[in-house]
Length: 359
Length: 238
Image 1 (spheres, rainbow over the protein chains, first blue to last red):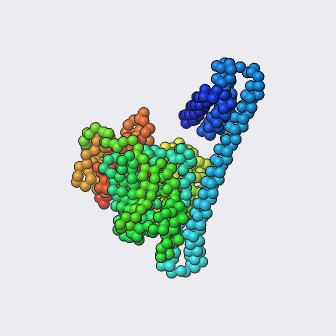
Image 2 (spheres, chains in turn red, green):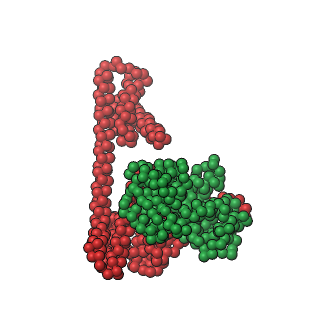
Image 3 (cartoon, chains in turn orange, red):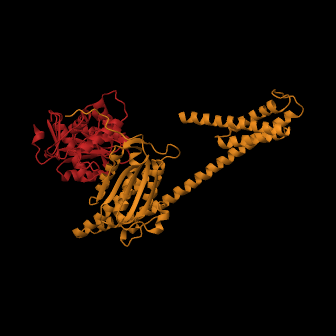
């Protein structure tokens, strides 16, 4: 509601501003050449600009009506008086009105068309993502079906074999669930200004929750955490940011190929919060650097689970961070890879707000 | 306690109901399952189970309606089973009177812990003098908080929060509930002051605030005090 009123005000100001400018320009031209032939053209230009910079074309139509009155009032004799009975002028005015309205609606239409183009572009991206996801989903599903069928059809399979297959099923379905959760979280992201529903959250909690949930899935993972001394609040959709950190941690655990502890570090850099996940493994291959977040990055690994791409996870991370008005990137350091993102800080740092009464 | 405690499972997804049922059976509980809210209400009334596991997405009625209806005549512990990314639903369910929730997919350990907590609360709630969890101990009479042998100095508000969580250990407490209990019913709904206090509490209580072992965050919902029983549980029984 407030947004609507603000938009309305903005459009009104733009309209008035441009009309005033047009009047000044037309007046200067008129004084220089003493001819009023340029005047309607200047106003035409003004109306076009108004249509371009306001929403819809109602402002353009309004502006063209005002322009016609302006020309009558300021530029035709008697100056500073409205006079509709001048010879020929009524026709000029009608033409002027029709032309400005036409120009206005045309501009508005082309703006509309641009919007539609943008929409269809988005639709295409969505379709591509869906295709990539379905492909990724099919592989583990096939595995699950095959393993469970094997178990069902051979009831006298030896116990070790059975356990192994059940283990595969469990791992595959966990992976699938993680994937589905990633996809679900995309649906939390809207479009436009209010892309995500944010709440002020302490950074400590987001970090510790992410670590705890990652530990649930990878109990042996070595993760070292560094937090800033001050209590830092960030305005975020916590579920989404947790998802990002978990994705980054998971990538580091699965793809770094190193047992050295992963360093998850949060720090305040100027007015931003920087969260980084640093591993000490093989690093990001140079040819992948360019399109790290494009959704196509699949880690080429000698091991059999190389089919599992980390690409969708990363492109999702980027979507989430961008929706929060932050940025995300990755780089190699001397001994491995580092993925990091920045988020805007919420307000100032907080000191303890209580009086100190000891118990 | 294992004279076949009865647990009612209200879950329309047959495979999930079956697996929960067999997990519970293998741990010595008796179970009943049903797939609709209506059936669930009738069974709860006629069999008086010790606890109810309730899925929120039932085909015939809203899970929260089941909770409110049940709460009109009974305080059987209700544990809600919910999917992730549904914080609002969980918070609603807790506000309507559910005791706890568990998020799909859960491990056997988690499920058993929730059920134990729910059953324990009906047995002795309120008259606890000392709370212990791991190295942490809270003496409610002397307002004393210790980790191991070390005294922890908390501010008044911090102590109140910790005590509240400890008295409800194992159960999730929503932000709103904590705020109402600590700051009163007219307190601002803004949970920021609570969150900041919690960060301070954690830095005082936890060995590693990045991986808390006493107070867990339930993101978007609230906090939960760990009720992992220490080896010697004498302190709790009196």
